[in-house]
Amino acid sequence: MANDGIKRNGATRRDYLKYGGAILGSGIVAGCTGESDSEATETSTSTETATATETETETATEAAADGSYSVTMEPVGTVEFDSVPETWATYCQGYADMGIALGQADGLLSVGYKPRLHTHWYEELDGVSVDKESLQELYQGGIDKELFYTMDADIHVIDPNWIINNFKGWEQADIDEITEGVAPFIGNLIFRHTDTWHEDYQYYTMYEAFEKVAEIFQEQERYEAFKSLHDEYVRGRVAEQLPAESEAASAALIYAAGNEPEKFSPYRLNTGGTSIKHLRDLKVKDAFEGTDVKGISSTNRTKIDYEQLLEVDPDTLLLKGHETKTEAEFQNTLVKHMKNHDIGSQLTAVKNDRVFRGGPTYQGPIHNLFLVERTAKDLYPDTFSGELFDRQRVADIVTGDF
Image: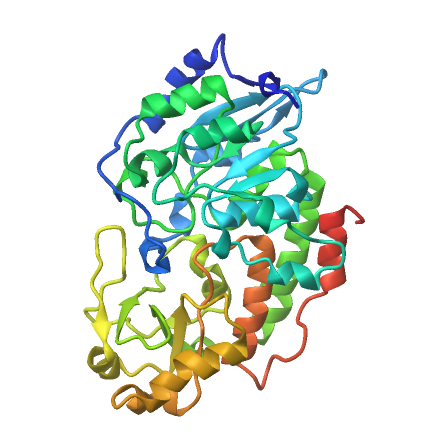
């Protein structure tokens, strides 16, 4: 699809930006000056459930007889399409996973940071693959505007406010320039809820955002098939076997840098954002509840040490930042270090072998299925074992055989 196959809701793209920019350009304050490779810079600290607005209950896609259609998503507003995008760029790997789930892997041009696109799960799905090495990595100590011209994508599935507020040198004028010279932006930062610049417009749950991506690619049937599978599996079979709330697992979610960490960045589980959806799905209780431990956010970088962790002494420890490791590698490095640590070895979770990987920063619908399965088996090994969902059914949806 040529770039002029996407148009704005109005006479010109500039007219559109005046409409969409009412939210895009307002309420923006200084945010992060750049992205660290540490997953601890990306978390969630507000509820995901309090985001719905009246506009979200309306139909966001309007198809015309000539094949054109529109998609509406905050903060940009409405983007009109003359035809379905063939190539697309994104930053957050959760959106990459959404597009892959919808059969759009071949058109994917970029992600923010390639190591965070965890493709090993796709290897379990027959016929599903992603050429990660061919993708453009947008984050290179910042984001170079020229990369957008080099990629020449048909659509940018990126919240433009994320770029403006998280990377030095970016202004609204740069977004306008790329929109007019290359292609529009559409997207919403959903993996965390901590940025002050996002306070003036709504968040989306994973499946609300997934539905929008399905509208962009006109893959609503695939989306509905995926949602049905998710609801049957996560909200049905798994949820029905979870223990009563009084017996639910309590865990401390922390970011642990390196293989021999001495300090940790705590996360709170009473928050929104897609990065901890699997823990909400499993109704995991926050071990930090009732303490003065503050969850990491865009403005809070407080860390805790082993002594402070021992004061809380959680039953279970979930460690972020180690998703590229196998379970054996995780146990032979980080967990081994904790067991040999003077104070770490005193933790109840360490003594009882209740130290597990906590999940990646970004997750999409495919990732979520695997994370629910892995975490359910970690937390409740007497209840959950083996494969909890049908890999072939997932593969069939992704490849279009459903």
